[in-house]
Image (tube, rainbow, N blue to C red; front, side, top):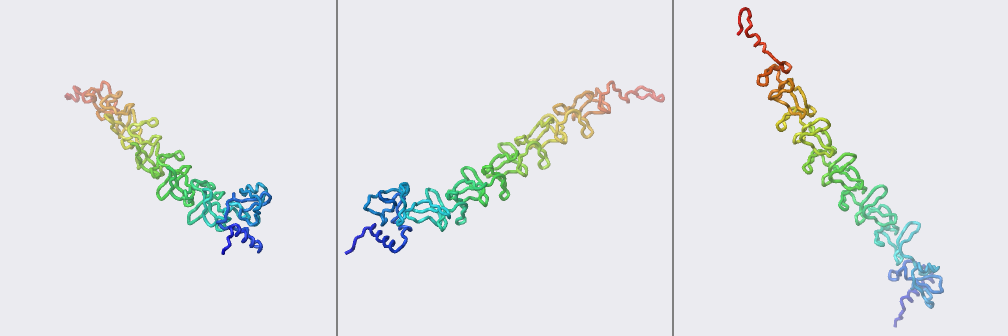
Length: 384
């Protein structure tokens, strides 16, 4: 016939024997005998607190139950046999570690505690700082908690995904793109990848569209690539030089001169730039020489400036009004301009009524020398 022994009595017998043999009994408890921090007890007359199964506990006295902190606040000390322990974070000379209620501790990998992830080495100590696991980099704060999202470490910014893995390369966060270099640091400013240039603001966000850098304007397409050459936006033309900077003012492109507003828009037609007027054709090219616009003809210098007044071209004089239009088939002072606007010399003009001399000036009461000899006798010969 078997003998029935209660569980606590059985443990009491075993522990009593171990004590008698001088074997330490204050080590790790079996998991099914673990008690939470709030499950210690003490007698009203004793000076120590115990787990409820402790063989030294005097059950003839009235027992009180509470947490270890409650017991300590009453001035009680832990029993040397069952050694009630505090679970949770512990610190010793080697660092921080985490003890479970059953006395075991976290070690050898990732452990979630209080909604945060921590990493413990094989000796059970919490890691901090940079950590490489399976070729992935993680960062553990000074508290040991694994960080996620944006983190400034030292003087640089890093981005860790929701799993804590440090990101590299192009990474989209929210609605913006960022570039994280091979070492994970967030890039800012100009960035060259292959044959393309990108600009990343002080926040690291990749710029698109127009962006001003050091008083110069640049244009980045939807992929963030810096554009060069001619650019048409909203029906307006812009020019970006080989370094991407937007042209403003005068710019010589492929041997031709163009003019751009301060906002970079290429100009066409008549434009007053400074004091002179210039004419830029429909392609924006600055015109020089003779040019017909509408019904009028204009003369533009080698520098493109519209000329006015008397101008000599290839040895011929022309007169240009204040508006720049060339005058023709009319008098300008005492000078006659023919249908081509050329000043006439040594000729009868205006329907043969007036005569202009070598300098083009009208000679009043001019008499043709050939006509003046009519009726004059030369050696008794009458010249008809």
